[in-house]
Length: 241
Image (cartoon, rainbow, N blue to C red):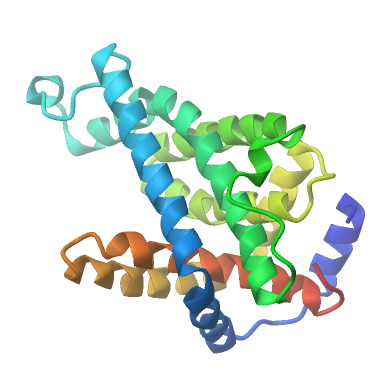
């Protein structure tokens, strides 16, 4: 799909149903919970390793060293953390985006009952690996700037950022800039619907903590499924992904 075709479909798309998207997400979750668990587990392990490595070389502050935060108020700590955590985010974001994009391709195969050809590491192979790196850097920079501007800009930007992986997953031919622009167009247009669905699924996913804490690793993927269906249904009003 070209950039212009995506924009045209987005303009013509109709209103989506909150309850239907939620139901689709629950139904698909039953089929892909294992792949989702693997995505969360790999991301968490990689994140912990990166954090430990950066703490050890002094790139980010030790979270247990309270001396770094003495005399600072909440606002200063919040803004400073965005800058201090940027090196870690620059390394972790490409991994997260690549795994999520691969996860969405797995979701499509299960949803449409297609023959299984792809895996979570699909976008770390060939030319796609470069796009993953670039998009990951852009993701980390936008997140850092939005966080430094404090809570409201951060909350606003977090919704369009959720669409980076799904737009990339099904539009490999687009440039990095086009993927970013289309993600913000879709995220802005469906901001409140997306926020509501992510909020509800997030609360439900947190119930996994009741299973000795580890259960949340199995339930957390549910949060990402409304994004897939919002993207799919938005385009399926006038065509298929």
